[in-house]
Image (cartoon, rainbow, N blue to C red; front, side, top):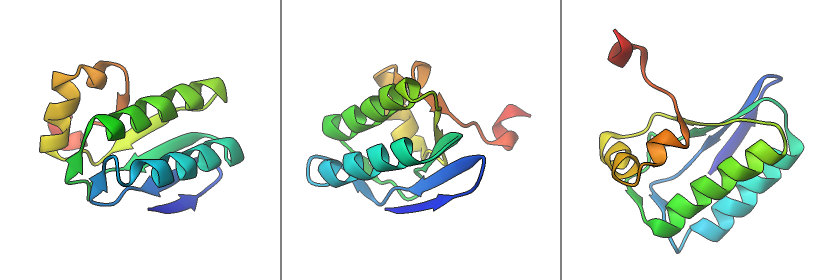
Amino acid sequence: MRVRGNPRAQVVRIGARLDAGTSAGVRERLHEALDSGEGDLILDLSKLEMIDATGLGVLVGAHRRAISVRRRLVLRGVPPRIMRILAVTRLNRVLNVEVPEAAVA
């Protein structure tokens, strides 16, 4: 996971897995990023191949923490397989998912 920042947003790149084995470290880094930055926190999920219930909990927890510190969590580059999981769990209605411009047209 890598964190990059700019004045308006921070970008966090998530690796290939967000599951029980990786969630503790990811959760800690997301909380640090949310507490120390300003503007949107953008999670780049373009490399994410696998997510489980624990990983989904990390996303929901980060979303709630973002609200509590008056920020916005945005999911970017969500692969189709992961988007289907978000849709089935209806988290696509709760979390801010960035839609590619090509999909809007």
